[in-house]
Length: 175
Image (cartoon, rainbow, N blue to C red):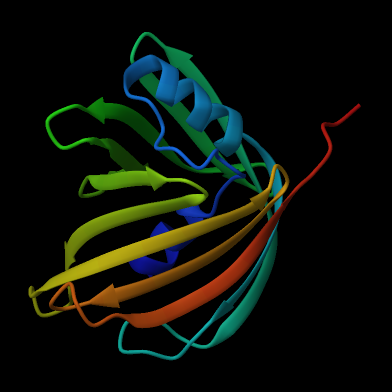
């Protein structure tokens, strides 16, 4: 369930240029411009050892605010708060650190790398037996209003098992 909630909270955004996102506040402002908004989400989940087959359609809203060098986002599905994310630039790693809370429960931090039109979120969690499990959520941006997503897991960081695929379409702002 936690992995499904993570995948739900990380469904996202739109196109970036073909160069890496610049660091700190400038990069965070670009992430906010692509990540915030209300999205119509369609997902297909696959049967694996950590996920179950199914389909989902829902509306996901990311309400994001940039203050100094921190981007805070509230994640809402069908108008109900599901979680919160906090993005910061990690200059030493050359990537973004994402702290996340799902339904009041802090999660292990994620690493976000942005290269061209691709975003990759990586996280390491523990499986039911306490063994390390790597999660990867990939986003491929096709335009300012359409993104394809996929989520997978790996025990070794090399061989990945697909858990879900989906699309997100940006909805026009409410009038």
